Length: 238
Image 1 (tube, rainbow, N blue to C red):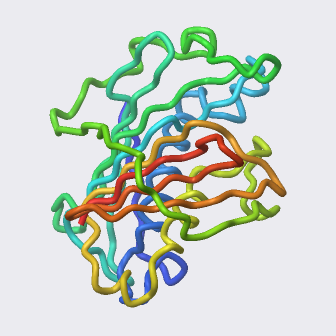
Image 2: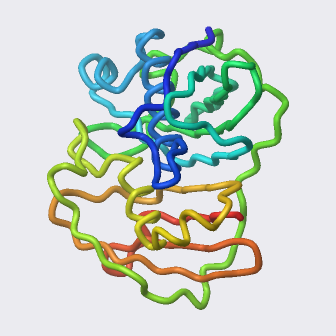
């Protein structure tokens, strides 16, 4: 099935230029993906109750094409494009009232066993092959990049409001941590084109996280670490 949601750019989701913020885009994707899975009865809350497992975002790459302004109507459409033995792939499109594609995302999810912490087969948590609609044909490639020569730019302590029902840091909160490494002026002057975030490990309340960054031509590479372990890595393209 395809899940379609009608939205309006609200005051709580805009940036300082009154456009739907980067965080607002990721929130829209997260909401649509989880609500799609809710319609299919494979959402995280159901999965936790029935199968004693939780879903985690493994990767998300978002492409930003056209700005959406405060008060503007838009639609979000999510669908499962494919499944593998241990992965669920979901594509999400964001369109304005004229039907123009403003952004799209490709997300990889996996199910984690609550007792062992190991990845579960998707077939053991209610996923059926018939749920997949097939890929849109849009190119969503996850990047490969070096993590050398990164410099420390910020540190963050995970607080209670960063935690979701799984009692780990919510995936969108990492976007907030990364975006806070830019000044307001940089956020207003830079044109964010693509943002990829890969989730390597979980973090929890009171964890101390360190953020590292390197600027290459036309892009930034960022890493969030807990001690020496990589929690998140990201490529941001301008």
